[in-house]
Length: 294
Image 1 (cartoon, rainbow, N blue to C red):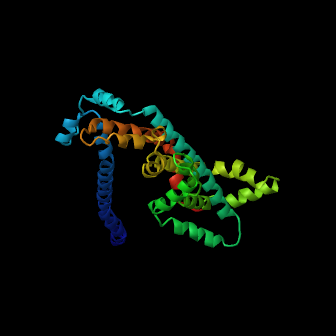
Image 2 (tube, rainbow, N blue to C red; image 1 turned 180 degrees about the vertical axis):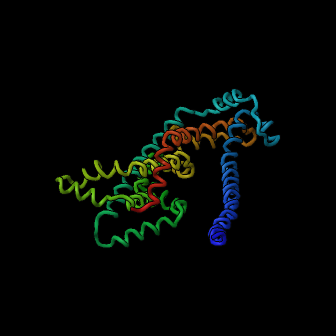
Image 3 (spheres, rainbow, N blue to C red; image 1 turned 120 degrees about the horizontal axis):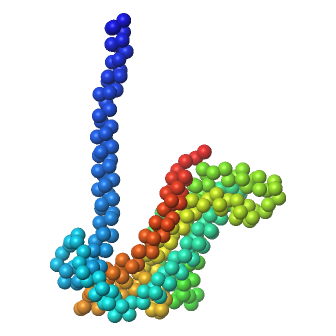
């Protein structure tokens, strides 16, 4: 009996001998995550440190401790014609309208591709996947020629309307719909006598809430930080966005005030941080929910 008991306990002892490897693996994973977190947050931290330093202090090298020149940099920033309120308004107007148009139109396209059956459906989906492979910068020259021929330079229309066609957002939302009983919900709504447009707006859109919030945030941040396309299309200073105004602080190469530049850069991405803090719960749920298929 003792031999049988000892033989039965041997697998347990082997398993117990393997358990110390698990805490080591977790510790390694945590170290990697901490390293990546520090690597991502360090540039942002240095920006906020440099807004408190003068230009000679910034030229002297890096430091992790703040200085006392924040008010001086604020005066320098205002003396350069930096219109903070106008830049905020222009950037918020473009980013919010772009986010709204791109999210709604992409949700409608994703719903149509997922629910309805029509000819060339696979070809359309393949074309969306194919377009995702090309960077947006390849279209800048042709896009500028089209905008110029339509006489839409110095206008927000070419910055907002093209966002309606967003293949990346369509792809993400369609993958999110795969994990939901969308076809069943649409069928029940049709049985109750609801139209297609009402079904989409009143039933499907609320179900897609987390995914819509996620994509709306990403589109808002991308549009808010967009510099190249507004720089190409806008020449009227009254229409300049906040990133464009921050770059204009470097116009005088003989007298560059780095403290004011860092302050302008910090002010330009503070709204994006605030939006993320407010919508973080929906963003996390929206990213994870589309990973599962029921």
